Image 1 (cartoon, helix red, strand yellow):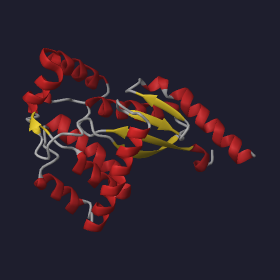
Image 2 (cartoon, one colour; image 1 turned 30 degrees about the horizontal axis):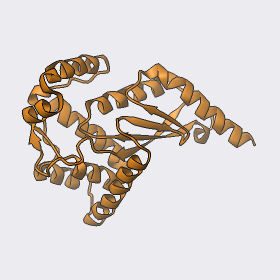
Image 3 (cartoon, helix red, strand yellow; image 1 turned 60 degrees about the vertical axis):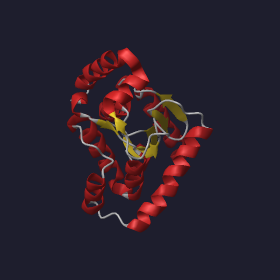
Image 4 (cartoon, helix red, strand yellow; image 1 turned 30 degrees about the vertical axis):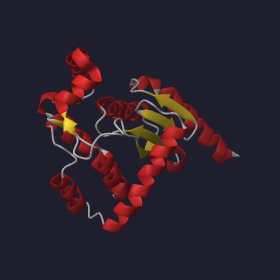
Length: 212
């Protein structure tokens, strides 16, 4: 098959500190591998679960108590179990602070083609190793490793804000929110098989376009 006909754009509104977004990525990646005839062009779109989070973040236990109350432990136990099924070793006990994730979104945008690798790395660092992705040490490491310039960071701030405004206009309240081929949207971390008919539909639409 022609690679252009195989390539499907997938926009994923997500937050780095959203465990369901990490699970959702693993599932859509698995779906692409199951399908075999599709190549995904992933566009990570910024979303903030906690838009009013202080720049310094928040103590993790205080955050869980404020958001989930007594149900917090059971909630994260369930997520950890689901994570195991998709190859994620969630280590929630290692997380001491819930960070402000907006600066991390900026670095992902600023990195351009490396943004995808950085996004996956940040989710793994945060959820599996308890690393605070908001510290200056961590972000300076990302900047140095991926050669991100200050000009690109300035531009990325505008791009992140545009994503946040678009999510608001689209009335997106929960993530991951996935848009396939700019036509079909899926809200939530659905299992891989849920994406297969959408991939088929997107490929068929492309075939019709190329054959027209």
